[in-house]
Image 1 (cartoon, one colour):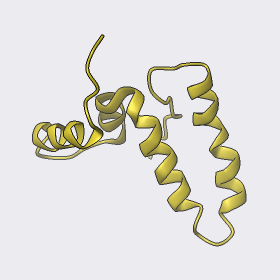
Image 2 (cartoon, one colour; image 1 turned 30 degrees about the horizontal axis):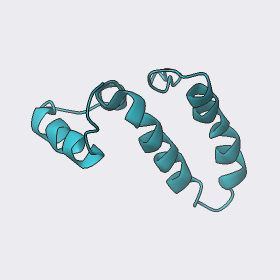
Image 3 (tube, one colour; image 1 turned 180 degrees about the vertical axis):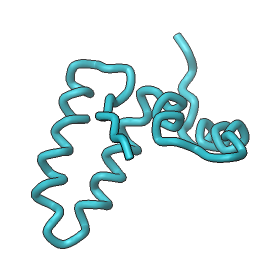
Length: 82
């Protein structure tokens, strides 16, 4: 069994190992693994503070919540093409 490593230590290591040119959401989620659920849900909660967005974001929060219930290793988000 592995000892618990604080998230702050993991985030410090991520900052040191981040690519110099750009950081993508996929890279962040892959690096954080099971701890990425908290980041995704925090970002969604912050977006829900925008007036009128809370009902839509509330429904979207069910997606990572369900993924946590079925014990996925990290959240799976749909791919968006620009």
